[in-house]
Length: 410
View 1: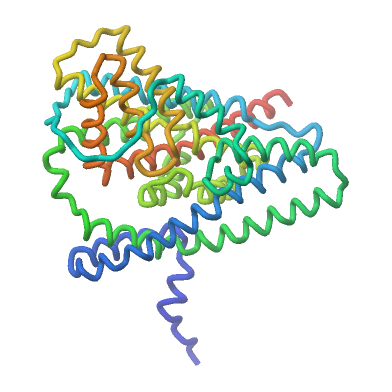
View 2 (view 1 turned 90 degrees about the vertical axis):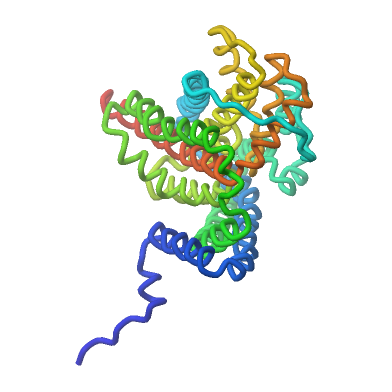
């Protein structure tokens, strides 16, 4: 007697999560092409998925970081310092790549008045002050507003304090961490459905017609991001590990970058990256801190966006750029990128800071920001995919590098 053929639903459940996401992606594109009116109604599905990720991310980061530090045993090593170095190196290198690409392939903009209601910071000092104020934010407010710098600060402080508590208290905190993680895994299981809704509604509502006039600018932006993802980042990882970096690079792009591309939020992708870090066998005390930190300060894609759009405005206005100014722009773009919000379009609000280096008035700079919103359908998605996948990549590179060093010394 032959066994019954499993239903389509059971066969889909047996597929890997990445395969399910790809199926959702293809289905979303097909629905947008053949039934655009129906596809527009799927926006709600995508919004529910992104909202669920954003809702669970703050409490996950708070509980996980606090539990990791509270239960950290004396003698265990974490690798935060080398990860921070890789974050900063990668962000600066991305800005340099953007400067070189913008010089070789200059873009011109049609600058006109756009009604875009945005509020941009007034200077680098304001960005740094904002970061400091985020650190000392009220913990309830930080959790409600997804202020991950404030959440990290309170989680670290509480974790250090609870390290001196009794074993029972620390065990309860560990159980709470496991419970929140279980909820996160449940949310991530709905990623294929969420991606389907996001893709179908985005293509049906926006399409790509509005992007035709900005093909060259988009090509420079996306080209820089691809170069950083497939060349620059692998070079940095090879320098750290001294082995073929591409298996790790491709894994991070496939399992983190695809989801981040459609959620368009580094903050929303934190649960995905934490789950991937666990599957990669990384040091939990390390990635539980480095992943949420990376969603805030590891912004290679944001550095590229700020630099390319600023130099497009500079080229349009006929302003000359010498080498020292280009180096200064790279540094400023890297600093500004670290202060970019981990939500969709967060990097665009920092373009006026970079434009101020060249004496470009805010009225024109805000027009450049408006151009960024026009091309944001692809630009912001690719930027977030690069930012978020690099969080896991550099965390893995640092952890594996330190393990190799320990093995050589043993």
